[in-house]
Structure formats: structure tokens, C-alpha cells
Amino acid sequence: MFLDRDAFTLNYQPSLVDIDQIIQVIIDLGYQPEVITDELKPSRSSPVTQGPVPEFLTETLSRAKRQGKLVFIDFYAEWCGPCILMETMTLSDSGVKLALEAYVFLKLDTDIHPEVATHYNIVGMPTLIVVDESGNEVWRHIGSIDTDELVAQLSNL
Image: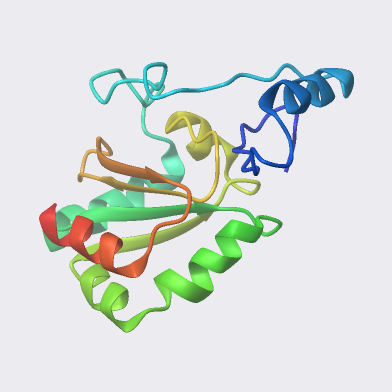
């Protein structure tokens, strides 16, 4: 994780520590915390992508077009614990694998391809997105997701 570049979610137990203490510790470490509430999250109508589709994706998008499929992209990093859990617990599930057969699947390391992560405004991992053959985002999920919910979401697209 690169704290000067990446956003992250902090889970805590309110009975053990209060949010003001957490914010103060983050400030004391030299970082600027930002508390995101549902009201402050970007709306789905706001633009998510930035600039033209990165060249790295062009072959994947062409394959999706030829096959008449959407593209499922799993944004991850080798050092990301929740990404490892997502891989072993969710993406390896037989029901999820079956649902993903309807998609062109791309597993993308954000440290190796930061231009794609920047293009899709990836700020936390794991992030799963589905894009159409032109690279336009049609669905996004940030963080862990259980197998049943992922299968349901994929089936609805």
C-alpha cells in the first residue's frame, strides 16, 4: 500500500476506540484523513474514468467485442490482504467461476498497471468493475463481496 497515493478503508470497534482518536493518530503520522459518508460518495452519474482507454486494455476490449461479452476486471495488488482473501474465498468459488464465464475476465495488478487504475479512478482494493466493449464502466464494487452477492450482481448485468 502506498499511503501517499492510495485510499483505504479503516474498520474499527467503536467500543474500543473513538473516531476522533483515529483521526488524530492519522494526522499525527502526517496524513490527511477524509471521512467518507454515503452522502459524500460520488454518485453513479458522476464520471469515473479519466481520459482515453489505456492501450493495455485494447486487446481485452476487442476480444470482448468479438465474443459479445462484457469485461470483468479485478483490480488487486500482491500486498493487499483483502485481495488475497477475495481470490481464495470468492473468485475461486465454483458458482462465481460459472457466472464469470459470461465475461472476459481480467485480473489487473494496480502496481504493474497504474495507468489503468488511474483511468478507472481505483482508490481502494479490491475493486471489481465491469466494463462494456468500449471500456465504459457499467458496474463497480469496492471491497470484499460474498459469493452469493457477486453471482447475483453478475447475473443481473
